[in-house]
Structure formats: C-alpha cells, structure tokens
Amino acid sequence: MHEVLVVGAGPAGAATAIHLARHGRNVVLVDRAHFPRRKVCGEGIFPAGVRELDQLGILPGISEQISRLRRVRFTLDDVAVEGSFAGEAIGVDRGVLDTALVAAARDSGVDVREGMTVRSLVFDNRGAPIGVATDDGLLEARGIVAADGLNSRLARDAGLHLPGTRHVRYGISAHVQADIDTEAVDVRFRDGYELYITPVGGGRANVALLGSREMVRSLSGQGMAGFKAAVAGELGGGGGAVCFTDEPMAWGPFPARRGRFHRGRLVLTGDAAGFQDGISGEGISLALVSARECAEAVEQALRTGRTAPFRAYEWQVRAHARNSTLLARLNLFLAAKPRLARAALQGLAQRPETFDRLIGINCGDQRFRDLRPRDLLPVALAMRRLRKASG
Image: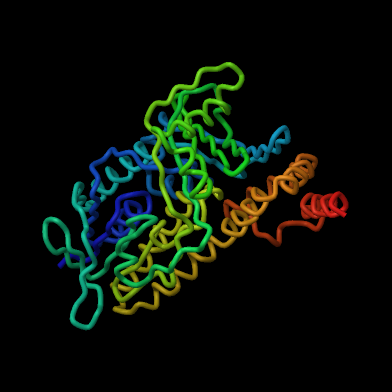
C-alpha cells in the first residue's frame, strides 16, 4: 500500500504531490494523459499563484515561455477600464506549465505514472474509500487526493458531487498568433458571451469564450466556425491577421459544486473541489494555493490518523475562493445587463484606483473591507441612471 495516491497531474495534483514528497511521503501521481498535453483553460496565473510557483521552483524553467502580465482590461462596446495587478502575474500555455510541474514532481521523488486511466473509486466493506481501480489494476493508499478536474469521477463516486444549477455555462478555447497587448488580460463583454484574451508567450494568446450552453453550441458547430469568426472579428478587426495555432476545444459545464471536500481518507483539491466560473480568472492560482494546503492537511491526517485536518482545509479553500466567487457572480450579473454594465464601467474608468482594488480583491491580495464608500459609487450611480431612464 502506498502512503499517498494523487489522481490527476494538472497544477493542483502535481503541486500537491510535490509538497507531500517534500514532507518525505511516498507519493504516486497518476494521469490518463501523456505530457505535454493540451488542456482547455484561460491560462492566466495571478499573483498568489505565481508566488506558489516560485516556492515550488518552477518559474526559472519556464521564464522564456511566458508572458508577464501587468494589467486587466474590461471592455464593453466603446467603454474600457484598466486596472493593475499588485504583484507579478503571468500567462502560460498549460502544456508548458503542466509538463514543468510533472517534471518537478519526478525530481522530488514522486512516482509519476502517465497514461494510466482511473476507472472508479474503490471502497472497503464499511464504505470507506481505500484506493482506485485502474486499467492496470488496483492502487491502494493511506491517503487519496482527487485532483481529477471539473467533472471529477472520484468526487461523484464518493457522493460529494452536488447537482448543477439550471443555468450552466461552457467555454471554448484556442491559441492564436495575433497583434495583441502582450502585458494585459483583455476581457471583452459581448452579446451573450465574454471573451478572455490572455498572452501566453511567443507572440501567442489564449482566446477563451465563455457563455451559455446555447451560445457555445451555436458557435461550436461546423468545425467551430462561429467561434473562429468571432475571434477573427475581435482580433483582426483592425486589418491584422489572426492565425489559429491549434484547434478550438470546448469545456464545461460549470459551475461544479461540492457538498464536502472529503470522505474518509479521500480529499478533493483543485477544480475537483468545485469551480464557480472561468470569468474570475482565478482557477489556476486557487488550485496552486489549495494544493499546498491540501498537502498540509494530508500530512497531518497521516500523522494523527484523524480527518479533522480535512475539515480545516475545506474551510481555508472556501475562504480563499469567496472573494473571486462573489466578483464572478457580480461580473455575470453585469454581463446579463449590458446597460448597467456600461454605466458601471464608465464610472470605474473615472476611478481606476477602484478597479485596482477590485482586482486585488479577486486575487486575494485585498479584502472587501478595503473598499471605501466612494469605491461603490460607479455601480450605485449606474443603477440610479438606469432607474431614471426607465422611470
């Protein structure tokens, strides 16, 4: 029997495995993919996530394959507002990032098994998880970390998955070569969807479109023709060429909700522990932060034989996610009300320091109580204007 089994070698799983190996634990990390591999994602990593990568020693090895991000820009029609990151942020292709993390896991002594498909969670006769069934047989461990993503099989098998909401969303993502601002995450609110443009190094950008099931379905037909046309219209509108460097891929549905993060010796981390919406841009950063805390909880649980550390870990992760979740919901609310969103952005454009604070709150570097009364004026004035216009 192994000490720890980690299922899923994305940022959350690989980072958790590295931290546990550094604690001296015997760790097996499995993933059905072979690395490098393509992964659909927004590919922006905000300051908290960059700090985690720095602690893991990953940054030097990928420094020539990233874009260093300084700003976030929100655009609706002809209204735009920009804010700055308080710390270092980067854009990086997940193929580059995940491969570097898996290599670091191997270097840390983790037993990495690529190309291994996990079929199900395995329970003992008392209903407690004891391991997983794979194509190569049973893997048992004293601790099991489910980092198997948004549609986590292990979370479902463990009964930790909650039914989705009525209004689910999906995303489409692809990489392009185009003339873009290489230092900014550009978020464009359009009729029925949002477009995220994140530089990822080498003159390339990740373009991710987020929208309702119906919108994404309408854009993904006929070889993603609608999506490609929307991207070409956005990035090639000034006459510049847009070259897709890979084929668009879809992902979803989200949000993914979890009742709890653990059952017996099994604990969830990363998107497997829940995912609100890609509009926050915080997915990778939260995965990296929660990986360190997950590893600490597993280490304590192995030492004490108790599951109390898993409850403390769940509280920590929910606290980290709270701000970005609230702002994601606000962004979705505004996206559904273009007139209100336009008026709010006009107000924020006149108070860029407020937008800086909102970015800091989303990234976990500031708290909502850091907002001042006048910071709430843009949205309040927008609502007042709408009431007058409709009255």
